[in-house]
Length: 406
Picture (tube, rainbow, N blue to C red):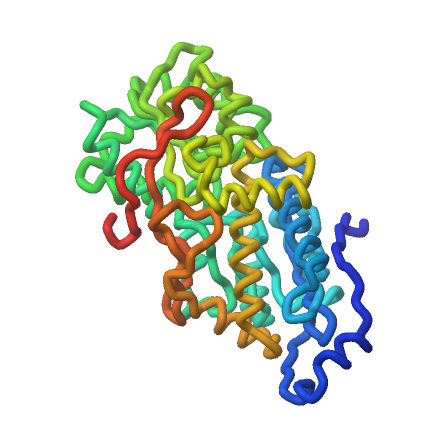
């Protein structure tokens, strides 16, 4: 069956580009997927399936490139963004990526979503020497340039995030007994191992650890098991659908632990609201981007620009969904990376430019959080700040914490 595809390309005449480029043509360098007129970028996203709440990310990225094209493209070239629905199924991701690389012949992939999905294509992309940039997963393995020089992460890694939660639990919860709900894959394990490492000699405070499969209908039975264990801390390692279910179920059965929610499920629109605002008061998570429901950013220049962009280019999408902020923010980083390539749009130069950011101010990042990369550092964002859910939004507290300080 042919993969469902969405292609976003505003045409441009090659004659117009050639006349504009003039004698500079001789200096231009291209890999497959790039030309005088076009930059072809591939993407996979779960528009269907158990993680379909993340589908808005692909749609917002598509809207971003469309707006770039309408403004004239990047160095005169239009972006042809081809995004395919993999349903959060690793086998389907492999099929989609083979199509993008071997048939569509993209220059690179960008923000392919999900730890299990990216794991399934990790070796293939590096064997093919096709850049796999700013993947939409915080697994720590994406920052390994020695073994995988064609793959780069974007967001703070899950392991470090969990270490921060562990240290906060030890400092703030008296006689902590920790219950963990974990998606049964590499994404879940990365968070879980970070929690264990952060607890150190106190690792025995984990009294119950339960898992779920992405194909499970609910996590109700797992939440009941956690309550029955006597846990007074709940570490919720789950994607949006299950995160909302778990917090709602905890409230339904009268379990009131201190709750720590992984950042990837912190969207007010797709998680906190469905869980019920009354059920999620006091839940903690880590943040690195501004939350659009937090009114302290109402007069912030980035937030104003984002809201204006959303109204003009992504009308109808939720202004309360943090995934729309994420998609816009990571797209601005990819945009800057492509701009830095100039007329040398080779795969090698694309990776070189991605690995050459020094304290770059990322759009929508929290104050004090910047992007830095190098040939030996493939972790663009390495800082977070804790926040607590209060009323109908997140409330930041404490200092910005950098990975090295954990």
